[in-house]
Figure 1 (spheres, rainbow, N blue to C red):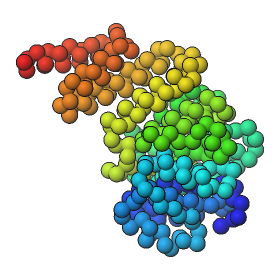
Figure 2 (cartoon, helix red, strand yellow):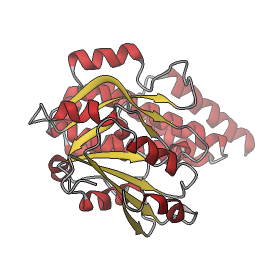
Figure 3 (tube, helix red, strand yellow):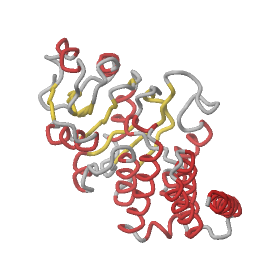
Figure 4 (spheres, rainbow, N blue to C red):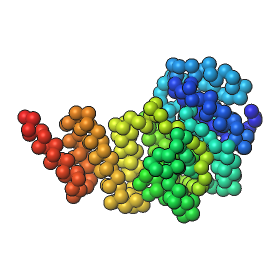
Length: 304
């Protein structure tokens, strides 16, 4: 392991002993080798520590009480020796060209805060496509650059496909430790509002979709998404001008609508009506939202 590496790779993990060795092997088999690996165990109760024994001489391992992935990542950054950071999830895989592509770009750009790229799905086609960002959109982003509306309209940023300046990461405050799912989007917003962010039309990691993915918690994902958007608009008033009033209200309203539908399915009727009311306060002329409000109101009267 180099004494002063170019990149610190930080893996926050929790009960991923079955996936972690494959993730680590993919990192070690990259073409670019000037890195250190820091694994922050976020209070795992499985065999995580024992499966890492074989890598003891090649990694830095630290165990913390469970406080969520954002806190674990921040703890890893405090240990990082390199000027550039790479965050990897403990169930995904790096492509051999991962750091060669990303670090190869940032060393030529002294003012860059972050560069990110595309990923593929380890289990095959998802949403009828091979890559996380559709191929035509990926090409457009690389040609014209990344704007706030690109991250706002669709959460395209995956930190597994990024390299971030450690100094910039610290300057924007690192990960928000109150978030457990939408922390990448929140960090991406703050980086983009303060520093140049670049995108490369390359595939640099594979995303593993499985039942244990944290993002499958729909209620938490949607409530955090709403929080992150509202936080952006509060902290950066100019963001509304960049995205437009219609764009901001449309995305927020749709999130409240999805939240309402999920709550209704779970028989959380009052909470569902409350969320639909929020959607309508943002998009009062949306017929679909009005229809559900009317239908649910009728259902309530029939049950009385």
